[in-house]
Image 1 (cartoon, rainbow, N blue to C red):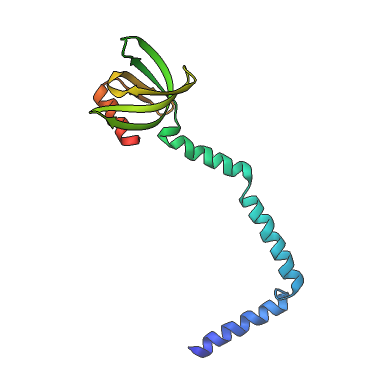
Image 2: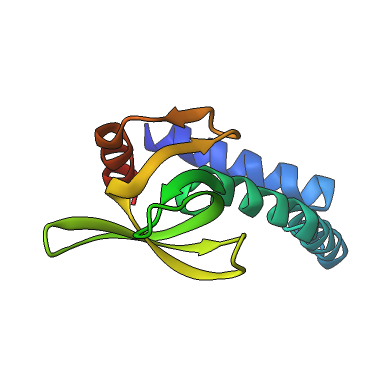
Length: 138
C-alpha cells in the first residue's frame, strides 16, 4: 500500500516538473489569474445587489400603509416604515418613520384599522391579526 502511494506521489511530481508547474513563471501567472478571479468575485455592483435583496427580505425595511384613528378620532392613511414594536401599560405600540409627516411617529396598534404591504401581498384588517403579524416580525 505504501509503495502504491509513493508511486502516485512520484508520478505527480514528475508530471508537475514536466509541465512546468513548479516554475516561478507559471506560479506567478496562476497568482495573477487568482487575483483577477477574486476581483471578479467581489464585484461591488453584484455585492450591493445582493445586499439590497437581503434588505428587502427584512420586514423592518419595508414600507407599510396603515389606516389609523388618532386620539381625536381623526382617520388618516399613512405610509410608514416600522422600526420597533413594544408594549407599555398593557397597550402595544409601534415606532415608525411616517412618510406623511416626514418624521418618526408612535402609533397605538389597537388604533390601526388596516395594514398593507403590497410588495409582500399583506392585507390585514383585523386588529388581532395585525398585532400577531407585528409580534412575529418585529
